[in-house]
Length: 315
Image (tube, rainbow, N blue to C red; front, side, top):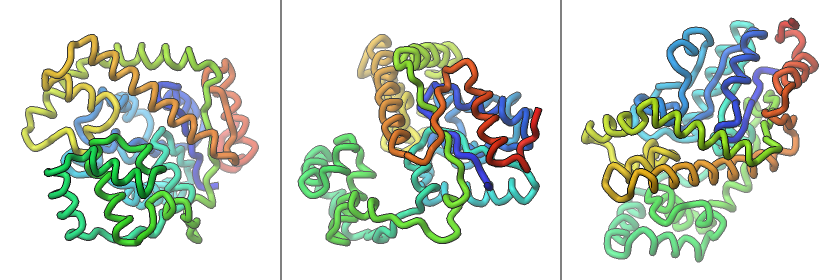
């Protein structure tokens, strides 16, 4: 086994479990978080602080400027390299986070999608200026309802790409993704997946709310103000579509009261958690652990001792 994939919904305690495990194992943490890859997105992404990163080796954090989008394909490349590096030094890679699209790509490989077509994309952009992105979202729904259902009506980048794929290949993006084959030698062949699935949904909701209020106390809005002040970022960038950042950006543009902003961010985080748990339930090969169970850390350690006794140091 070259790596453990430790996945769970936001605010369920993944990082604490991972760092507790790293204390007892020769392990390093590989982040699987689409917001933590970006520099400057610290408080709102619940990024490990300086002390935690000094104590435990973390990979794939602060590797990209928020003006430069980061893709699932880049994640698979970078995570595979990090896992190989950790393993080469005789340590265990703990791949920890909640970006399920990245997890799927790491576990199953990436579909062979058509390359970018600048002419199609430029035409779609022109049509969006005239009709609006919600109209193009409706067009996508007519040809690929499965993809359209998971995209917001103003998700310019993903709607444009899905329509571009359909026009280039004649096949819906969802159909192409469903046909993904696991490539030989993929790190997915050596991943032991653990799904952290809370049994108490109300407790998860309480933790989401408490954590968001703590982020506000830590200066989350000041963090977003600093990003806005750069002048080269906008709300359409993938980094700033992250839950919390999107709502904060809209609030700072003057579109809502502080109470409305807080409620919208917490509601969006709850929806994200529900989506993440749906993904996790579909991973039928995963070991399921309730992260709120008193012995969750012990369950995790015992599972790894049983599967990787040559790597995990028994206490």
